[in-house]
Length: 249
Image 1 (cartoon, one colour):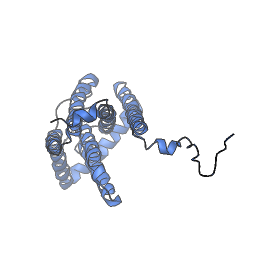
Image 2: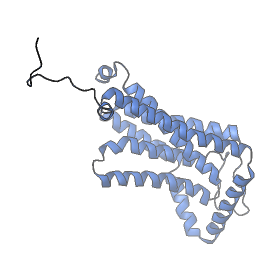
Image 3: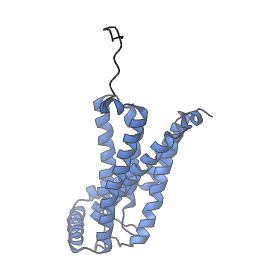
Image 4: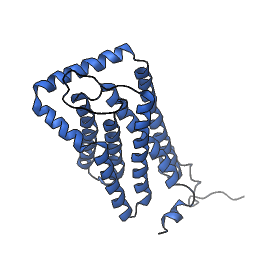
């Protein structure tokens, strides 16, 4: 009868959960799960907010009115602030952001990242279609101020500027965070993304052309779109045969 000697190799224990996370298949599942959960988690408060807007919930109406009145009073007394907000809202309007996204997609294609370029285009397109459609479905009027400092046409909810700024911020982070090797670079990217999204939305309230809930709705919808398209992109990028197809011209 033979026995195992000290030179015999012992059976390997099963990999721990921490190791399995590094496996491509488990990593794919983790990323997909996180993106899907994020899309759902963000979409729920957006749907709740839209329901409150449609129902003209009194507390929300009072909050919107109070913020708009306070910022409008400040704007009337500070024309320099109005000019600054007007410049910002024009520079980071939906069309300039879409043009920047198109240039980014072209740059990605030239670098060989065709799938990521398509994700950028699809993300901006989905948000660009959903925004106007929801505006028509909700049909909310914009603030009607006695002495307006700016004007805008169309319905109010959700804010198109806030939506597209959130989309652009998400695109910025998804595309460039992998290149940020140093903590300072990552922090800078996050700060730039937050600045674009937050200040663009605030500019719409400050100019009196949107209610606060319009802007919050735009931010939530933009975050949900980025999360949802990221989940879809993750599945597509790791689909069977994707590696072989990605090498074709």
